[in-house]
Image (cartoon, rainbow, N blue to C red; front, side, top):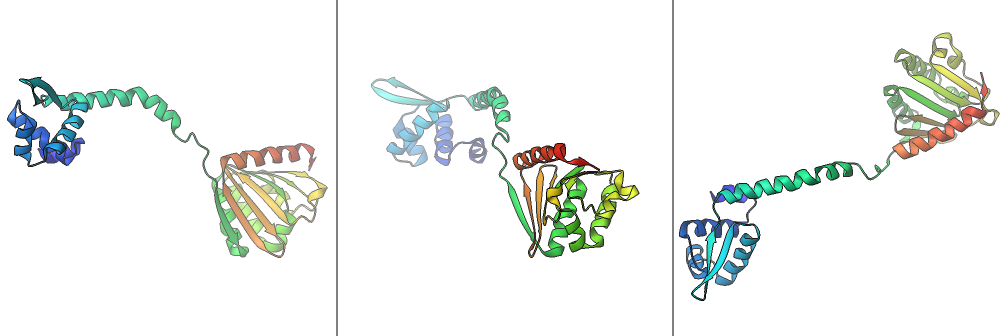
Length: 239
């Protein structure tokens, strides 16, 4: 029984004194000390703890303090009280779930292979927004960008791009064009970095002397970049 009482939530000494009090019935601190082998000072501390939990009562008789264990059903009553408390605060607890903004997760990818690994994740999204470099990507990655576009089209993933006037040929291919919308901003001509926004993520790619991709998972950052993209999209020239 002691093991079960420990699982219930009592401490080792609380379980011992409660069981001793059940067996002894009405008893003094001296009697509990004899039954458990604990010091009287310890007995009084544990008794107070059990009284707070509603598992022990005390009373004075003939100028002496006596203790009596509450009926075992009190254990169930206490569990019911705890359950009621949890039920009352459950709606508030649920509101706390993910109440704080998720901490951004950042990953760094280097070199051609690293960047390819970074962008493959976009093939699991429904829509990709891009602004910045386009032609530079073809020059660095060659046929890979065309293959990526065809994989995207196969999955029916729409891409909206604000890029320079040097539009890569694969982006205006008959098949690719069905899932590609382009607007032109001359300021992005010969640009060597690109920003990709999809789902709750942002990928920044530099295509200069250093080939680096930074992938950031952050709903707040992704949303702010979508607003930047929308501004660029409005002022871009329709192709």
